[in-house]
Each structure stands twice: as structure tokens, then as C-alpha cells.
Image 1: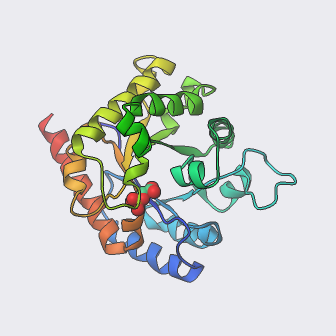
Image 2: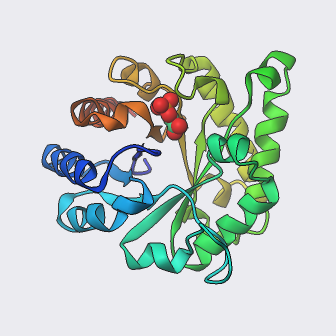
Image 3: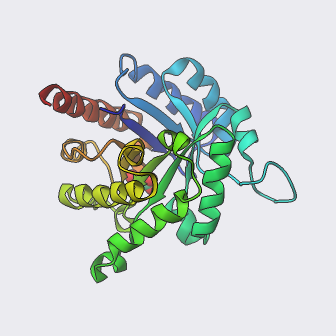
Length: 261
Ligand code: PGA
């Protein structure tokens, strides 16, 4: 079994002092979690502070975005090296809010993945279909295209460092998570696209996460899906108690599954 990965994406929420309080309470609740790798992605202004908590806190630090160049005249952007310096190990790339609200293209996302890997960061690449694509029956095509575009320049030797997050756009922040059947099927499509790029063995070395309205009361059903190897949690990661319930709940189901297999 791959070590499950659970990521809290705080988006544009929280001042530095709020982020410190939340990250400390998460750190306290993670004692003994061992089996799960936990990552927090605060806003840029809180990265350094939360990075200090991460040092002794049993979780790792992620940024929510990056630029592919190492420096230059790119107003408002942050480079991979800057993220590394404040303690980031992970970076979220191609979140649907970046794709749709900020018009990030597949080409940009590919450049970001390459730059993150080059810098030694672990990219968490988000893919997922819109409601229109699901209704039209083109969800598989959209997801496979996104996976191919993001990873086609990636070497086999670093593929283990990449995670792919299946985030159906219609499930993000809406309270409507995808059903376990939909999640299992889409994770299968992602695994197939990855295997088509890297071969049967290497193509399954990356972890595939689910994201979109994950809450304490649906985590068990999602964790029961064998193809789900972790979670990307937005809204519920802003409440320490809820995020911890999700992490521990996921862990218990996965350890149980592993025990049975
Ligand atoms: P949500 O967000 O959990 O609030 O739906 C998930 C995400 O955007 O990563």
C-alpha cells in the first residue's frame, strides 16, 4: 500500500496569526498518525510561519501555486526556490480555480510541474471535468487530456514524487461530493492515462487523491474506494477538528483495508 496523502488547501483564507493557531491545533491532533502523510497549504503570507510549525509538527508544507521561472520580471509571482526556502516540500498545481478563474492553460501547468520537479518539490496536480463535460459524456476525455498535458515531459525517475488529485469541478465547494462509483471510475481513468505515459509499473507509482466537498461525514465512503490513495480537502480543512476527523477516519478505513488484503 502507498502511504496515503491528505492535503489541506486553505485557499485565500486566514491571516498569519490565524494560520499559526490552526496549524498548531492540527499538529497537536496528528500525534501518532504515522501511516498518513499530512500536508497543509496556507496562503503565501503564512507559509513561513506555518513552515516553522511544520518543522516539529508531523505535517509538511505546500504552496498553492508557483511560477516556473527561478526569478525575473513577473509581478505577483513566486518561484520554486522561494517556496523551498520557506520550507515547502509540496506544491498544488493546476487547481480548477487557477484553471478557470485565472485561465491557466495545460501548457502553463506542464511548465509548472517541470519546474517544481526540477527544484525538488513534489507537485500535486489537479485534474477534473466540469459539469458540462460530465453531462456530455466527455469527462474521461477531459481528464486524460489534462493528465497527458501535465505529465508528458516528466521522467519516470521522478514520477513517484507526483500526486494527481481528481477534483470534479462541480464538486468543489458545492457540498456535493462525487459518488464512490464516480470516484473509482475517474481514478481508473487517471491511472490508465498515467500508465499510457509511463508504462504499467511506473505509471502506478504516483498517488491519486480525491478532492471536492470531502467532509467528516463522507470520508468513510470515499476511503472505502480502493483507488483513493489520499484526499485534497478545501473548506473542511479550515476547521481543525473536522480536518483531524477526516485524517483519522481515512487512516482507519485504509489500515482496515490493508489488514484484510
Ligand atoms: P472543497 O475544496 O473541499 O471545499 O470542496 C476542495 C479543493 O478545492 O481542493
